[in-house]
Image (cartoon, rainbow, N blue to C red; front, side, top):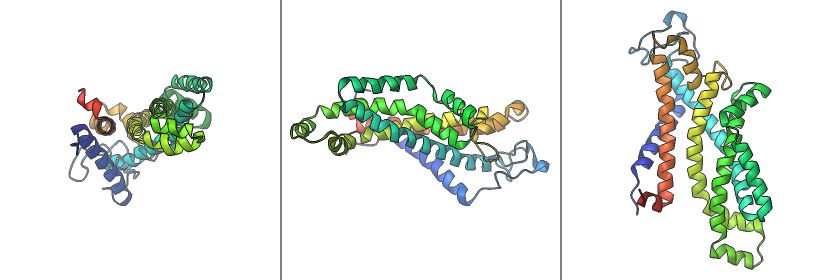
Length: 272
């Protein structure tokens, strides 16, 4: 049995802690994350408020805990949208004749020209800023990554002997795709989902920072950064705390994706 690599362990621990924090916030937080207390505004860290309070008197730690729910929710839905659309497109592009497959991939490249942030801003301007708009936009922008990766893996599977035998036996394309191709690209889907999750975390934070993401009063790490701008010198902790939370979340999902890639493809780890 191969030992687990450090990236997989570190990434798994970080992601697990974030998930546990989000789950804990459903049943307990030190204070109500949306409670405005003018008398307690801009308090320094103390035993009562571990990370202090913001300009509205809200507890920063409570906002970080509840904000992790928003981050994970947006990431899960966005990655789910990308996988549901991108995986079938990737498999279809690998299995159809040459020119239809090329048409699919060129359309995929065209969508790739629109970054997630730009697409989400466009969606927000048309449909209004909301968590749903951010999730859909980030998911659609992540479709090309899934389609390209899955197409590459599916092309390799299509050249294997058992797939060639199934085609020679007269099996129809979709049963081959479901029974042979999809199970053999599952590892690629898992790795890409982890990497895309890190991108979704950054995109959601950026959208909330710009005002196109999760609307108030729902706590969001990106909006916490936006609200802290006027206190960068007088109370820098208001920007440092959510900034560190975003950085740790992105690092965790990137390490997890890197570790899973090494786990599923030992040749990559051997070449390092």
